[in-house]
Image (cartoon, rainbow over all chains, first blue to last red; front, side, top):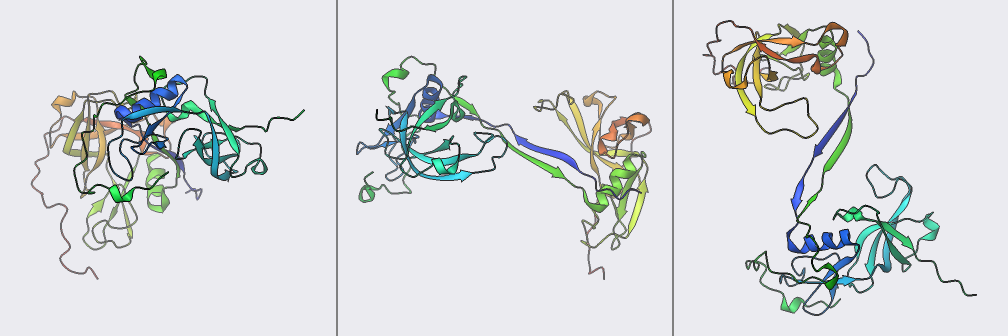
Length: 151
Length: 199
């Protein structure tokens, strides 16, 4: 009898389809249309990504507002060895990015050539996927905004 | 962002209606709203079956079905796991089983499964007790309309052609009725209890 170890690929997959509700649905509709929505709290601050309920007061939130497509990296972690289905097939940075006009950060990815390009407080700009369908992956990621050259 | 915990609601109070109307930014006026999103969860493994199941799978390549006898109760289990599921003790005796048995229980599936185009609904999955086994295992009942499957029906394995046999349980394409008289099931306590420490 062979002593070779038997092995076989095994894929476990749950093909969930979730209903979004009006708030997350509006966020995803915005992504498909190429804009990013936040939601305004009673005190005027804006959560982005939007949430259906205020995380501090539990009040329902209803006023969706457009936020900017550039923002600031609040923190980041370099991913030198991306796994399948992550945002990039090359090394990239996971970031919490606070978009202009929003008061809370969003988890996403920054496509930088190396960790040396990354810094807390750096400015980044959204990179849209060409084909958009109403999914968080409609945002391909973010790219560093280069400082404007002074002539 | 300000922190207004002083105004926090009673956390046990029921939330307001979920479908509160939302207002959209002007740029989204008239856009077809997204109402659902596909979020598959996918885990990719490399599976290694271990000693008992490897022995079982290698025997499958020869169209043989191996079970294991529990040293404490004498009951025979298939597929083999290397330990008795009843007593938890290591197995010492491997038992070869015939590729015939009967339907202990069954289910008819009428909803297709994504990425399993080979399983065309309606189809019948059965819990099949092989002759000489004490417990059932799962198989597909074929060569019969699902509605005609019944508990006690005698079945025989339908194997892949010899040139396609692998070390895989997929060598059994399904289980077809033999036409023999139905099994009369009286042994309801087939899966017994362990009353005392087997040692």
